[in-house]
Length: 148
Image (cartoon, rainbow, N blue to C red; front, side, top):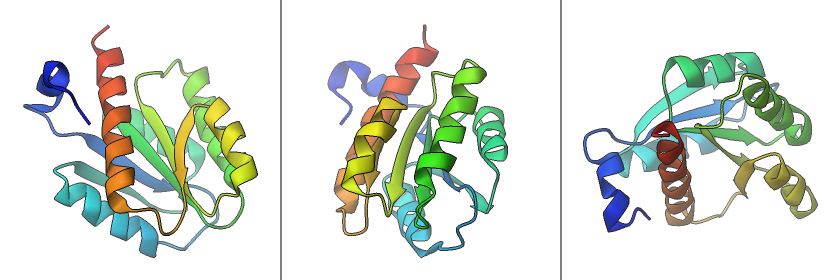
């Protein structure tokens, strides 16, 4: 969690998180559970809606000045779609918005996603407290980068 010296990063402005299910995946129950948990943890939550393109996800993240983009897929396309979002962010020079992932992601894909800068990659059954703590840490890292 945020330590005392960096707590001021979140004092006046809550963590802002964009939840996105890019690509072809209409399974949205989990993302709504996460949205409520993040909101209850004091975060400002935006939802990109169903089926946004990777370009729309990145555009929304930039336009809304979010701290974190949380990507979720259950259809097995994470290695393609998550990569496209990460690549677009790199191409645009965006390094002050954290990327986290989740959904149905095989363990063997997680190191590759981490190498792309997409952390977490939690699956169904992960305690919400673990996800919230991870997102909070990543938001802190993003805010510190924005201060540079």
